Length: 464
Ligand SMILES: *[C@@H]1O[C@H](CO)[C@@H](O)[C@H](O)[C@H]1NC(C)=O
Ligand SMILES: *[C@@H]1O[C@H](CO)[C@@H](O)[C@H](O)[C@H]1NC(C)=O
Ligand SMILES: *[C@@H]1O[C@H](CO)[C@@H](O)[C@H](O)[C@H]1NC(C)=O
Ligand SMILES: *[C@@H]1O[C@H](CO)[C@@H](O)[C@H](O)[C@H]1NC(C)=O
Ligand SMILES: *[C@@H]1O[C@H](CO)[C@@H](O)[C@H](O)[C@H]1NC(C)=O
Ligand SMILES: *[C@@H]1O[C@H](CO)[C@@H](O)[C@H](O)[C@H]1NC(C)=O
Image 1 (spheres, rainbow, N blue to C red):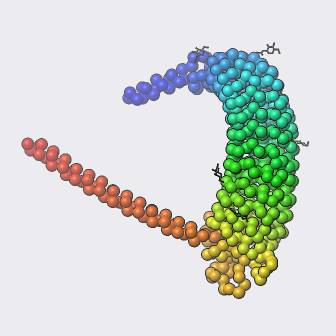
Image 2 (image 1 turned 60 degrees about the vertical axis):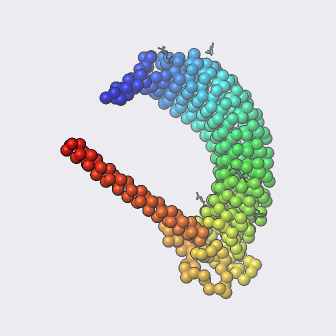
Image 3 (image 1 turned 30 degrees about the vertical axis):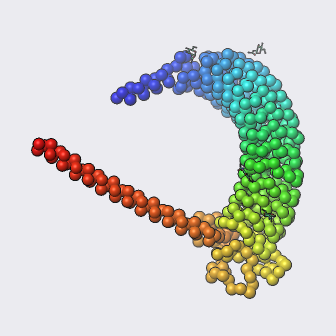
């Protein structure tokens, strides 16, 4: 009863509006208003009190944001103005928003931001300008935003960025530039982003990657470069990315890669190179990627792979090489040294891959041997396992079989080490169950004992 009353009082306090809620708005919480359907140009007519901390305005009618829309709102922390077809913003519109931490202008039709628009927002942490029609950005636009953590400029029409655009954004952790029209990034553009963790550059028209561009990004964990027009990557381009864990280079125009490109990519777990016209891979490429778990090389023009290509990849679990029409032969022992490879996707020209020369095994179909590494079989020795002949058939475990028309498109190998892991796991499990049973037994025993004791005491009391 008391709890209920307290709850009512608290909710009442939260709902108590110190101002009359405008008709187009909902004012569910104190200091916050959410309005939709009004007109962008007439925001001030809504009569929102100037001491709100949160304002959400969405699906407003098409128009330009007027400079008196947010006058005096010096305590506003979060302003969301999305899905409203805003076509222009008057200079000075945000001048009073000195406490703002989040500004969201996503999904409008903004083609241009006036210079100095954001200069008073020195505390801003998140800025969403995505899904607009921005064609360019003034080089000083973000100069005052030293506290910015996340910047979304994706899905615009940017085809050029000034070299010092981000030079004061030393605290940036996420930068999304995907879905623009960028062909080149100027030298030094990312020179100040030592704390950047996620850089999204996919779906642009980048043609190359210089050695210097990524040099300062020591904290970068995720780099997305897929769906660009990249033809060349400078040697050493990724050398300074010591924290990198995911790198997507798929759907580009790469015909070759520089030798030792991933020499310092020890922490990369995912690398996609699929859908590139790659014809050949350098002999020294993946050797240092000890942490690599997924490698996608499908949809390329590769006709073979370097014999030691996967030699050191002891963490690899998935290797995709399907849809590479020229890949019809693999060097002997290509897969020796792969640690726990679980799923291998191989599909070449409608034929199982064959062993490349030189050597006696040349031309033999590659097999998945259940007890060892995938390798080119010894033509003299008997197959080490009866299942080896049908080794390109789908594995027993349906969870690992994709819906592929080619029966041998996927093969799976479970390393012996894994089996030991499993028995260890089961051992622990049984031990756990036994312990649980013993503890339960003790508890039940104690309860019964206590029950008897109580009965005895009560009976004695009743009698005495
Ligand atoms: C906000 O302003 C209104 C008057 O417009 C006042 O009644 C209310 O107490 C103020 N709220 C805060 C949190 O200062
Ligand atoms: C808004 O713009 C008008 C003229 O364009 C100017 O006179 C006025 O001072 C501006 N107001 C603010 C708050 O910036
Ligand atoms: C990108 O640029 C090309 C050529 O300049 C143009 O045809 C295309 O419309 C642009 N795309 C966007 C989203 O602006
Ligand atoms: C990256 O790998 C190095 C060893 O090469 C290790 O010392 C470092 O802690 C790793 N960094 C991250 C973020 O995992
Ligand atoms: C495997 O790693 C060792 C050192 O860790 C290195 O010397 C060797 O070149 C690597 N092998 C390949 C094929 O990259
Ligand atoms: C390559 O593999 C990726 C990841 O599974 C997939 O999305 C893509 O469609 C594949 N492309 C081709 C040509 O096989």
